[in-house]
Image (cartoon, rainbow over all chains, first blue to last red; front, side, top):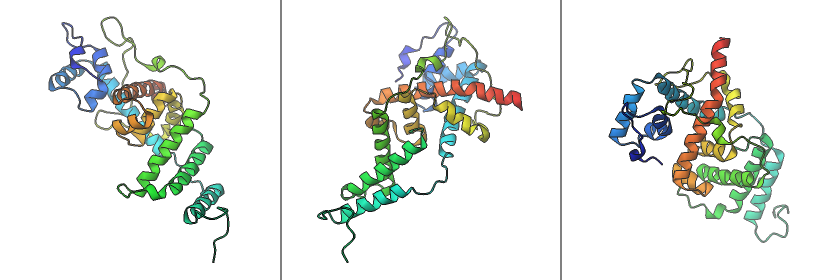
Length: 105
Length: 162
């Protein structure tokens, strides 16, 4: 995704745009040592980009926590139980005339 | 992943049915639960592809903008209660986080679901969505940026209400 040669560094170094657009590669450790150093140099002087980095990571973590915690305790639905039993009958007795036929004693 | 509880229940039912029907193909190289989980993800993706799309805002609406010299148009404020080592939002915001998550375009929301929540690798996500790994990385970064933008007003409002 990220080509280090595309950094548009000006006389003052890389820009907020450079940092923000390569943030995921920076977090994932996919940048070259040189580009990583450039980003950290920018972060050392740009509070806005530090805030962006922190809030980006917080958002990723918040989404994961919010979704994983969203598991309402619902009982196993009756139609799911029936479907599993139907499938099991079909699987165990592929030659049965009806998948719902009662098991042969 | 499917947003609606009843859709999720249908998907679980379909996934279990599919798993039972193809149980003979399970080769035991992964855990049974992992295998069924993968089937469930595929069922969810099929349902997403088949259902009518709701109107949604383009991802570009949520991405940062810059002035000519490359600085942010609006500087990012510090979010309260987080720091670089432990970037965590208050748990009481979970419901609002889920609501904002639903605002993401589906093509991007599903990438966050698979990568950040279901824990699939970039390669697995690319295979499931039938797109390239580069496309997965680009969508994931944009989706995270958009989610950040959607959460910011909530987090800052929370600070003011405290």
